[in-house]
Structure formats: structure tokens, C-alpha cells
Image 1 (cartoon, one colour):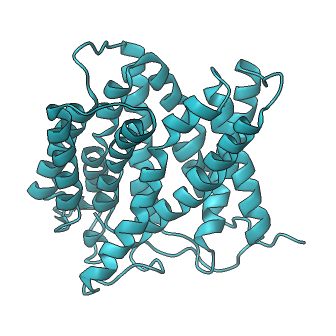
Image 2 (cartoon, rainbow, N blue to C red; image 1 turned 180 degrees about the horizontal axis):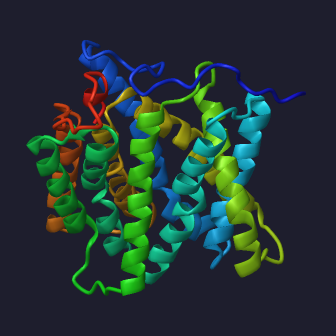
Length: 328
């Protein structure tokens, strides 16, 4: 089985295949949002899977085994390698989404209570709106900014505890991780994907890059456990296949077909699913404040799927095209 490189030109952001036109039926956008939401919803089960099935104290190993095997499998299935500019574009996106994001995420998670970490990650819609001004030349609407703030408040009510402690290094790491993911969303929207290349191939490129970066770090700092149990293997398989390969392919599909800000709001389903998983599987309970936070988060996600941003004021060197202006 040979691996061949695509010869087609890279798709421009305004013409990437799979983008619905501005006149596309609302039902198409809702269907795309529903599929994209499966990604962060699946990530919400990561905590339960890690604590119940994986070996303790090896978060980087879990990250490496999530990324590298899934990436290599997708490369083998799609038999596509990047070409031209997509060698460095895939490397950048792979580092942002996996190679740099995962270590920062796990560092922040280990140095912060889960509620604090989730609250910081909830600012991603606001970060996407900010990056969109410079990269996509789109100014966010008041609706988007308001929904973003409501989402942060909702997540805080849902997951924060009164005894939460703050570690400066953990805060910086979690904010950096969230910033990298927000930048990855906007760059993915800006670059599109090469014509004739499937989303699975594009996902495989990024996962492989991230896994190649993560594997030596994990082996150097954590090493391998003495043995893997059946539960360990099941946990790694679930995270690699369902929680990574499929979840990220659906997430990238959403980035391609929806405005960037709409996709970023879907990320708020992560703490919601994590809370519900704890409620159903770990016997946890919800307070009245948490129920209120849950309502606010759901409202934020729904409002975030509404009206799109407007073009930023053109500068002397850049002018937003009508199609690009609808991508935030």
C-alpha cells in the first residue's frame, strides 16, 4: 500500500469545499452544529475514562497514546500525505491542537481544581472572536460577545467550588492551552483544506504531528507502566478512536462548515457533559447554583449559533471579502 500526496491546490478559505452558502437552509447549519458538538461532548467523558480506566499519574502518556496511534491509523486508511504549503500548515495545526495543547492542558489540570480549569477554558469563544478580527477580518457582534460572557458565567456556576484554589503556573498554562486551541480554530477556518483531501486525512496529519511531539516527552518524563490491564487498553482505545480520531474529525468538519464563533461555543458542551457524567457515573449531585449554570451554558451555546459577525473596517493593506466576513 503506497502513500500518495495530493496534487490539487489548497482550497481558499472562502471556497473550501463543504461550506454552506449564506443562503443554506438553517436545518443544514443545525445538523452540522449537532455533529460538531459530538467532539467536545465526547471530550467531556475524558475525566471519567482517565480516572476509572487508565493508569494513574501518566497524563502525557495518555495524550501521546490518544494522538499517535490514531494519526497513524488514519494515515494508513487515507493514504494521503501533505504537499506544498500543507506540510508546514499541518505541522502548525498539529502543534496547536495536540503537540503543545495537550501538555499545557494536563499541566493546568494537575495544578488547578477542575472547576477553575473549565472556567478558564470557557473563554475560548471570546478568544476566537478576538483572533477573528485579525485573521478573518471579522468584527464580532454584540450578540456573540454577550453570549461568550454568559457562557463563562454559566461554566463558573456549574463547576466552580467555594474552596477552589489558584495556582499561577496552572492558570497561565490553562490560559495558554485555551489560546492555542482558539487560534487553531481560526487558522483552520482561514486555511480550509486541500482540494480532494478528506477530513480524515487532514485529521490524521495533525494527530501524527502531535503524537510525534508528545511520545518522546511522555516516555522521558513518565515512562511506561509495568503492565497494561484490560481496562487500561479499553480506556486507551476509547480515547484514541472515539475521543480523538472520530471526535476531532467531527470538530474539524464543524470548523469547515460553520462560522468560527459558532464552533467555539460548541466547546462549552465539554464541561456540561463532564458534569453530567459525574452525576450519572460517579454518584455526584447538582446544587441549585449548578442547575442555573447549566441553563446559562445551554443558552450561551444556542445563542452562539445565531447571527454571524460583520466585516471589520478594512485597512490600507487588507480588505475582507464578503464570503470571509461570514466565517466568524
